[in-house]
Amino acid sequence: MTPAGAPAHVAIIMDGNGRWASARGLPRFEGHRRGVEALRRTVRASIDLGIRYLTVFSFSSENWRRPPQEIGDLMGLLKRFIRNDLAQLHASGVRVRILGSRQRLSSEIDGLLTEAENLTRDNTGLTLVVAFNYGSRAEIVQAAQRLALEVAAGRLPPEAITEEAFSARLGTADIPDPDLVIRTSGEMRLSNFLMWQSAYSEFVFTPCLWPDFDRPALEAAIAEFHGRDRRYGGLSRAGAVSGAVS
Ligand code: IPE
Ligand code: IPE
Ligand code: MG
Image (cartoon, protein in one colour):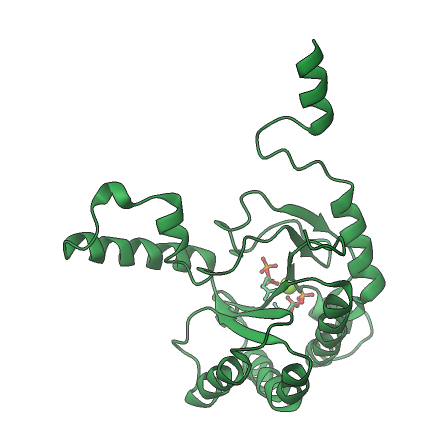
């Protein structure tokens, strides 16, 4: 938790762009375009609220199953987002981190993602983690491969494979686990997002479709988070007290 009371790390599964567009008789692209506007609003609100890390699920490793036209649209929007918004993000002190595989991405997108990370590397404001071409299982398998290679090379004894050593080989190595995971659009599943990292996250599922998401929606999710009792397998404060006196 930050001093301001906001969770330190909020992760969002930005879902429902297509349904937002369909409900208005618009092409899915329009939903994705408005989704980028919701992202801008959410980044600004996160800075204002004192959130330290905002992770957004932008494109999953399974989203390649979509029609080529839609994939092209999503790639185009990412390019436009970085080209149009990078300078402003940098000016706001945002540090951009990219999570996911660079395989299958065009060299143009690869270059833009690297540029965004490099330009903002030393910023100390909000860390915006963009999960793009990301899949949690692939990330976990890659961490296992890294450990196996180190063991096989004799650089790591097998007993040194601890939870910390495993975490350190994930794409999120130096990023704290999310306190709050929000999924918009009413779906209640992780869809291969941060499965290791969300072991003790609080989940808020909202029917709000992503293009409609805004600061009040973020504040409502945070308020719900504050009403939760994070026990981490132990006892709640109230339970611990009554346990002590009985
Ligand atoms: C989220 O909206 C954006 C991505 C997954 C890239 P969707 O495109 O999944 O929208 P719905 O779920 O079809 O409404
Ligand atoms: C999850 O949404 C991925 C992103 C938001 C980028 P999907 O719309 O792809 O998930 P499913 O297919 O409904 O599980
Ligand atoms: Mg969806």
